[in-house]
Length: 285
Image (cartoon, rainbow, N blue to C red; front, side):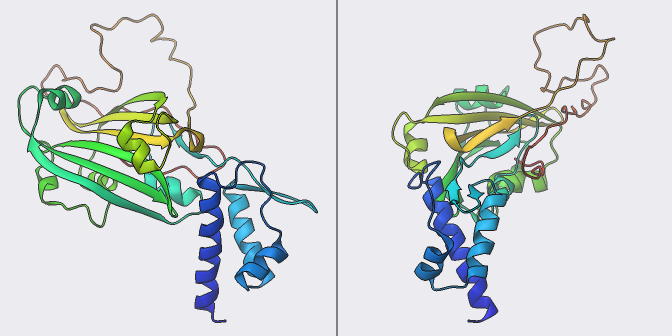
């Protein structure tokens, strides 16, 4: 067996086991086959099997118990509430290959709903995008996105075949502020279909608007299967000088406000996020 064959076989075993865990075929607490059983099934060495199990254990997908075997733990991807996580990095943190499918790409004139969603004052062109992100062969996240083409005109020419919309936006448009809205809710019909979930299955939904200076760049709704994702945040006490201070108007702390001089607002610095058990993802859309 060549080195190339060994590497591809390692990845195939890793993906096979991860798919069974993420799909629910092997639920939490399920004992996966012993090393000698996997060796016989895949006709490989103990070293290859051990490397796969170590990878899965480091990703918190399995728990290895001495003399008892390896058991499925509940896999979670984690992201900080006050960061813009990169979905590809979330999948990579689980030790799985990442891919995505672009399901809808539609340029059109903004509707009243679009203008409300993107906080636009007048009609203009928008780009509607729908994607499904995968961890291995399993659906991981369903993305519904709207881009304000007045703020990002170059997006109209991008086909998003090689790079997911969020990553592409981050590499082209610097963001200065973001607003998150987080819900635990039932999967919508399109999300349930894309994520291969039963209708009404509980999901974690993150809605986010992002600004660059005083322009809304994008609105995105990310739907994750509820059992596979969690949000982590760490907060610091408010500055004692700001306690009891008053602000005028009902303004979100994340939304940019025009400076008195008419210049672009200062970038909002989010509180530090914290990802436990896995490396922090780079800021991405």
